[in-house]
Amino acid sequence: MPLSICAKRQYVMGRDPKSAGRRLKWIYSGSRQPEGSAVTQPTTDPRVRIANGPMTRMQIVAVALCVIINMLDGFDALAIAFTAATIANEFDLQPGALGAVFSAGAVGMAIGAFTLAPLGDYIGRRKMILGGLTLIGLGMAWTAAVSTLTPLIILRFITGLGIGAMLASLNTLVAEYSSNKRKNLCISLLHMGYALGGGVGGTVAALLIGQYGWQSVYLFGAAMSVVMLPLVYLATPESVEFLIARRPTNALGRVNDVLIRLRLQTLEALPAAREVTKIGVQRMLTPALLTTNLLVWFSFGMLMLQTYFQLNWLPTIVTGFGYTVEQGIFAGVLSSIGAICGMFAMGVVSVPLGIRRSIGGFSFLTAVFMVAVSLSEASLMLFYTLVFVMTVFSAGTMAGMYALAARVYPVEVRSSGVGWGIGVGRIGAIIAPLLAGYLLEQGLGGDTLFVLFAIPVLFPILAVTFIRSPYAR
Image: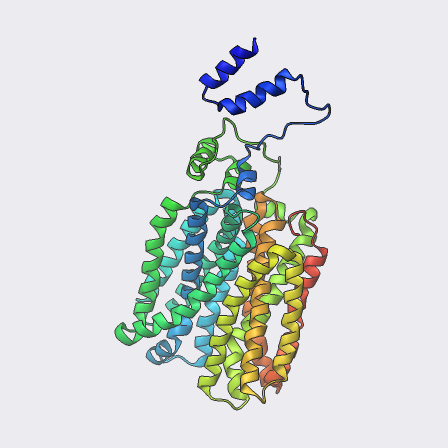
């Protein structure tokens, strides 16, 4: 074809004449692409586009909704702490019975993480989140109607079941809809939501109890879950990675619907998926994942052992040092603020340093500052300062482990891996207050406990050293 006709056709097709001219010059000059080289074409695999491109409005909305849901989880999980004194007086509960109510929620979260969270690898992250919200809403609403101990324990267990079932899918969905550049920050923001929900929830609960009674706290939590259901249904798409890996009915159409919302090129066929013979729990129990499983599970367990020791016993230990109850409560408030700052710090620091180095550094510094806290009881201001800094590093380590867990597992077992990690962690949350109480009864002081509980927080250093995964850098 003559070059003039070629140039005319390019112009008619709407191409820039200057670009056409440059192309014609290249053809006319007889230039050839060097042998052995390849023209780089932009990939059409949406998983790569989502991971490497800038985050769109839809991705930001999906992550923001997950953060808000986790804020509600923080409120729902700590609702019993906000209402415990009022309920104990009304139901005439002894401390032992109230302890059973506290533990019921933690047990529910552990069982939910072990048994229900892995369903996210079968039915999808979005359906698991909607199911968890429904379970939490029902549990919170019915709690407002109880008047005796046994149904209260059962309903706290059900609420915990929903929280435990949903958290892994929230973590996974945020990881899968975040760009690689923002992934660690987005996961940190997700878990900041839990701490923020618990902190803000205390103020909301105090206002509600004063005006409408303790039941209003649970009705408020139920109402917020109901409000989130249509928002998640309408604004949160299913994970593209899940749809490509599991290929449910009309997977191609559903992927293309998401791509249209992401303003990406639609597909004529789904990208190739890895062939797997086992998914979910079956795949989790294979020898290939044994080392990863043990390191992730025990890291979560050890971190929550320290976290729930601090969460439950810090105000009591402060009063044991000779300070007032109000000063003990303020130490708990500082701890909550430190947790929020620490999760945000991990999201920022891990971008230049990498997730492995960040977790290792934060883990080591947590242990250092726990020992420093044990030596600072003589000065309240120094104690406050060290508790705050210690919590920054401990909460940051926990956020880092959530980000790591979302990376080290293949997509077909990602919810199972994160869910089981959280489940083992909840065992640490159940053991921590009981172990600390036993050690205090044996005559150990609060300062000694800070030293002892500094040992478990070093375990994540082993995890980041020995986990082998191309994604966990």
